[in-house]
Amino acid sequence: MEGKCLCGAITVQTPDKTSLDACHCGMCRRWGGGPALGIACGTDVQLAGIEKLKVYRSSDWAERAFCGECGSHIYYKLLPTQDYFIPAGLFPDGTKFEFTEQIFIDMKPSYYEFANQTVNLTEAEILAKFANLL
Image (cartoon, rainbow, N blue to C red; front, top):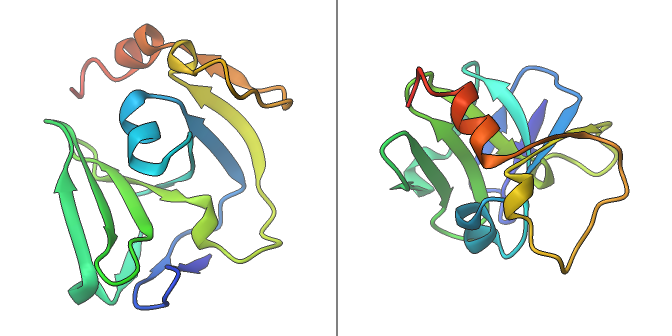
């Protein structure tokens, strides 16, 4: 799959994926103004235009990157595994994704609700899932 930021300065190439996830943690909501809708792309991600890339180490275990030109979010990367989570909005309209999972569901504010039936994991469940990595 190929995606790009708003201004086109940065492009991403990833393996074909269909599963879309939402993160409701406070950091993702603060970063983007709402839940992060991302594609778990693993480690096989190629970036072009990295001279425009700005990277922010948001925790001991992750970094977030954005385009220094237009501000588009480019990725969230889990540092222990080098796994990338790419915002769904970088990919062209019409890309077929299936909304499958919501994480930090217990941190989701009450002012929005998704109608999709998904796997819902709490903060404690996510931290337990990744305990050996963090």
